[in-house]
Length: 156
Image (tube, rainbow, N blue to C red; front, top):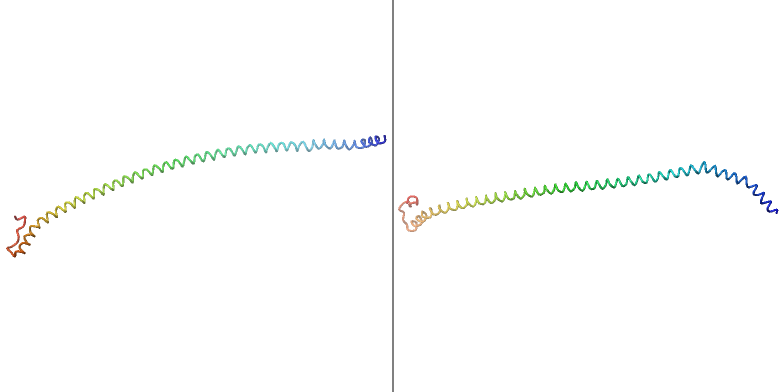
């Protein structure tokens, strides 16, 4: 029974320490742990709110980038269409210029051919006129007659 008495004394001696630790725990819980838990919960809520705001900002930025890219594609398409229109206009001008130049060159060639044909006809007529005179001169020179100037075709 001695052991039970010692055990009872030990429990009675430990009771004040137990109550002091219990009071210390309650004070610490009220004064220290509850405010820390509240601060941690508030911090967690702020972090989650900031994360949601960041996700929203990212999605908004992605939408703006997509809208910018769409606008850029549209502007490029408009510029390409305008360039194509200008290119076609330049090609049409070039075709018209080539056509006009070809027509002008053909007209010049036709006029030159006509002029050459007229000159050739004039030269033929002149040669035909001079042929008779030259024939007479050659005949007189070969036959040795010099009876005066040879009659010209106009005089005949």
